[in-house]
Length: 130
Image: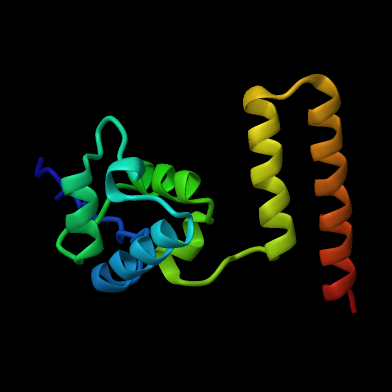
């Protein structure tokens, strides 16, 4: 009895960025807009030298590093990765405020942050409703 051949298919990779050079330029722009030096933007696992290489387009950060750079620079991952924000700017800003409130705020601060997010989401929805 002959064994049937095993077929394997490689899953297409979905990149988390568009172009290394463009990502580097956006990281640099976001860092400067946030008033941070490369050293201030660095964190364990991502040295200032590595950030310099990212900004020159020589390295592509992992998704986790991209997320942390975006968080520290105060921009969305989508802006760093593709140059556009996938969600409304007001909603994006309110999401960052919620994250900050969750990280260190008291209950009242978290409630205010979520209420502001709700208002921003409702406003964005009115803008796209038919």
